[in-house]
Length: 111
Length: 113
Image (cartoon, rainbow over all chains, first blue to last red; front, side, top):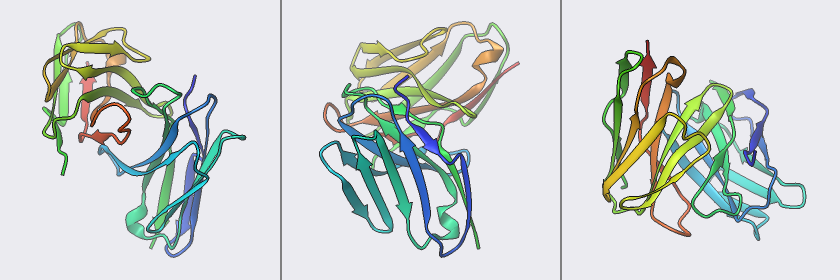
């Protein structure tokens, strides 16, 4: 399977702390995306990083990509209770039209 | 803002029924997708469409079919619903080739009894 796999499966932190989640994948990619899903809702796109990029920032989000290790990490700095959600990575596996999602990291930010 | 809507948030059907799940997007996107989401398995692609009347199988197409007669509408059909098709179904769209960001609908939680 080309599916990305997130690690850890669950993460619980206090408000204000940083949260780091990782994604590993198996095949070469063009790009990798991170999505957020609030409980029982659809996914929302957070950030995309291309295979020739190593790091990308968007607000409190920082994404890194290491294609040699086939892995990516998502860092959320100064977390807030509103960041409580599941986070998924998605890879395209070199097919521009198909995307492969992992099973997600469930983040709980305690106020 | 892109809006993707799904016909129902919750649906309960009986085994053997034919089930239609409708998805509509309002941003003239070329690509549309159907996923199912199950605990511990993440999102799995059922079918996607890159143009009107065009479709391509995803990873788990068995027991499903799709229809795209108009650009904005993508329907998922369960020909004969079974209990193992109880799941959350998510529709998504993206602008087209080389535009990777997907916009998701709110999901339909289908229960087959």
